[in-house]
Structures are given as structure tokens and as C-alpha cells.
Length: 354
Length: 79
Figure 1 (tube, rainbow over the protein chains, first blue to last red):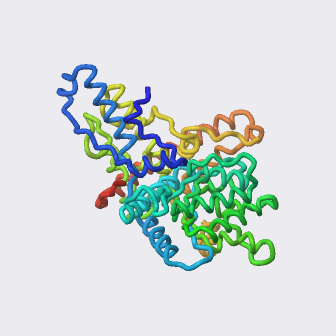
Figure 2: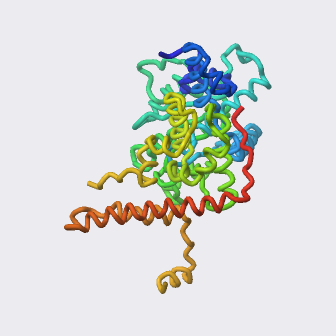
Figure 3: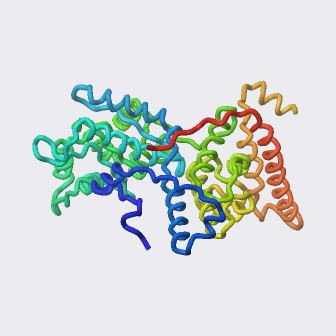
């Protein structure tokens, strides 16, 4: 059953969900009690304690140190855009495979940015009486067109788009909403679904450029394979040059799996595991339970932070549920994570090509 | 050795340990059954398991060596 007061799932693509996400604080780590004290708890208290531990396992928040540098890059970009005159502003595009943390990076940048804006201007309404919404966060639907993208932005603002409005009218409405609500950061996730290489998609490319030109906002995109899929199109002549506008104006920021080739990379990987050791509250856990399995865990997750999180939170749930209260190699062996990570670790056969 | 020397001389980057490990496992996975016959299929599976076990053993040994003397940084969580 979902406890509405406790649940932390947020629909970020509507202003209400986004505002709650911005206001959310990380969960507080429950105190680790002694096993004997745990056994003495009545069933209700024990169940509440277990739930609190699980909630923290899922809610202790991403590891900021892993992306602090790119956040600084984005901050510089936003400040520079705020100071620029008219014309298209420069943006950033996060490019990487699923699970590497693109959405986490962009959503948390938006969260910090909005908090800073609200510190500077702590009013709900603009001087003109409109709702103040400094950040818009939208996710691209499959096979989107300009109308779909406009629709997604208007949905964020809580506007029911007019039924018979054409793409041009919707674009005007988007520009008006952004101006009145003083939006200065637009985050568009899953932008790879907006395939820009095909002839029919050139309108979408121009539309993105128009928004970037006409809004006094910084655009941040996140998507998979942007440098290969036509999004960061490289062209110098004719129509190709027109399509290359995004690659010229957008800084590509790759988001890759964690590596362990150099001493620094290994130290970071161990640091990540140490965070999990500290934050997963298990009564029989000892220091080194995870850092001692650093190579095994790397192979299982292939360095992908999303796979590691999935593996370790499931392992913590299993350790609590089964009463083992400790993450061991045997327990980890019994847990399957995403298919790609399992194939990478040699635990599943790759699907035969047709 | 000859091929390796040519590769090194041509300036090719030495692949990382992970790339070598996945590179070793991948061709074995990707062999199709129709390319194989009789007990070669069993042999392929045995080789695959041996390669994976060997990688795991080498990884553990190398991992243990690598961990010595590494100062683990304290990473900051999102606030």
C-alpha cells in the first residue's frame, strides 16, 4: 500500500510534482540498533523500523561528488546566458547510456537552480501576478512532433492546450507562459526520441532553435546516443549546416559508467561503495562488506551507477527480509539486475541475433 | 607476439582490462550453433566458463592487490 505522506515518487513533468521534488529533503538515516534490541521489538515496531530502513535505502539521494563538476559547468552556462543580449543562447546536452545518471544530474541541477532562484525572489507570484516557475522539466514522448513538445511544456505549466490550436498558436502560448512565469531554465529529458536527421523532423529542429532564440532561458537536454543519432548533427553546408545548429550551440557533456583503470578511478569506485556501506542500515554489516567486493561489484554493475544501486538496494531488502542483516557474495549472487549488466557480467547469455 | 608488436608499433592504444575481459567473452558468446558441430558445442561452453572463471579469479587477485594503499575519498551526498 502506498502511504501518500511517505512516498517520494514524483511526476516531475508537471509543476506540482516538480515543486514537491524541489522542496524534498533527503531521508534521514535511521539509527542502527543492536540485533538483540531489534529482536525485542514488537512486530509492529519492527515492521516500521524495517520500512524506515528501506525508505532510506531508496531515498538517501544521489552521490553529489560524482557530478559536482558538471553542475559547476552548468552554473557557469546559466549565469553567462542570464547576462547575454538577444539571440540564441548556448545550452548543454547530456549524452550517455541508460543508468549512467543523466536524468539524476539534470533534475538535481534544476532543483538547485530553482532553490537559488527562490532564495533571490521568495514570492509565489511574479510582480505581474503570475505564478513564478523558474524551471520547466519535460520529457519527450515517443515519436514527438512540435505539437507534442509544445503540449508537454504546456502540461507542465498546468495549461490544458486549446483543442483546435495549431502548432504555431501552441508555440506562441509556450513563449507567453515562459515569459509570464519567468522561466529561465528548460530541461528536456529523453531528447533522443526527437530524431532530427529525417527530412520530416527538420521542423522540430527549427522549433527548438526558435524556443532557444525567443526565450530568455538556458536549455539543457539529456538523451541516449546524441552524438550518433543525428541530434548533434555535424554539417557545414546547405541544409546540413542548418541542422548543425544544435551541435554548434550545445556543449556535449558525456555521462559514462564509472571506471576502475586508474588509481583515482578505483578510489572513486571504493568511495561509492563506502557510501552504500554507510547508508544501508543492516544490523550485522561490517566495514568492508562492499569495498572488499569492489571488483565483483564492478563486474556485476559494469560500472553503471543505476545497476549498482539496483543491485545493492535489492540486496539490502533481501538481507532485511530474510534476516541475514548483511550483504554477502552469496546473497548478491542470487539477485539479478538489468539484462545488459547481467550479460556484461557473463551471468546471462546474450540474445541470439535474428 | 609478432602481431602484438605490430599493433604496439602502430601506436594502437592498449585496451583496458575491462575491454579485454568483455572482448574475450564476447566472441565466445557470439559463435552460432550452426558454425559448430558435435562436441565442439560442449567444448565452447567449457571454454566460456573457464574464461569467465579465470577472469573472476584474476580480477579478485588483482583487485586485492589494487586495494592496498588506496585512500578512499569521502563522497558527498545530495543535500
